[in-house]
Image (cartoon, rainbow, N blue to C red; front, top):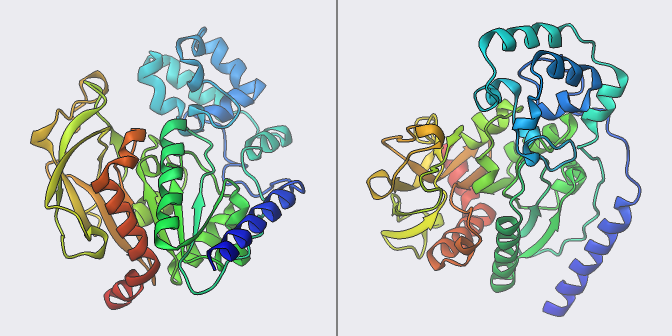
Length: 373
């Protein structure tokens, strides 16, 4: 039986690769018609010769002050998750220069070439999967247009595949936004977002994902999936995640901290101790997940580490949820902010948490969210 499943999944992957050769141009990317401004993704300003000319004229040498990964125009690039407004302090823009740039950018027309350039980082390549019945069917999604930390993505990828092998899940992977089509999504019980960064879904893909989730689908996200400084999809960050990232420590970046399980009776906490200490990059959010109505699974003891961010930013939250669940219509989500260091995905307690969370999302969470409606 296991050999049959392996062969079926291998055929699915081959079909997905073959279909990707017939890429269709994207025309419904979310930011295609958005006026230029300081709230545009930095990458869209860099891709426009007219917009870049304004920046070079009003703030000479502006981009020379940025690290290369912040000024790339090919995805993945940090420029996709940063705006001029967000980066003004880092770039040393004074108020007068920022005002001149804003006025000049607002006067620019959005050309056909601009629209094509903006949509190039999206795709509508629809993979074809043949999924077996009788077991949880899981899509491990890995399209990233913003910040991609290869070691953490790869470690999480290996950890989730190992879980699937242990638990007998049918799990396949895709880095194609076209997987978020109704006909593809209905094949799956759970979608896992592996450290996803950047705006990755077209408008039609967003609608398909939202409808699939609200009608009973399940989402599991880890770490970078909620770690962008800027988002361009309010439903995703405010309704699905229920918290907005504000920063992580930089003094130092990776620290030992105490993780405390708040709801030990929840299936996502099955097999976990009451608390443990581990090293990672610790996210802070505003508002906290509890304030947005989430069900908190684990919190972070802020007395056990130094929550000081870039330039001395105070990242203390007081109440500091680090893993939580939410019901989205008839669907459900689990998110854990743990997971930057690749070693994290071999830490026994964290592996147990993720394994239990995916099992909850695929199975017992259905009834839980039905009761809360």
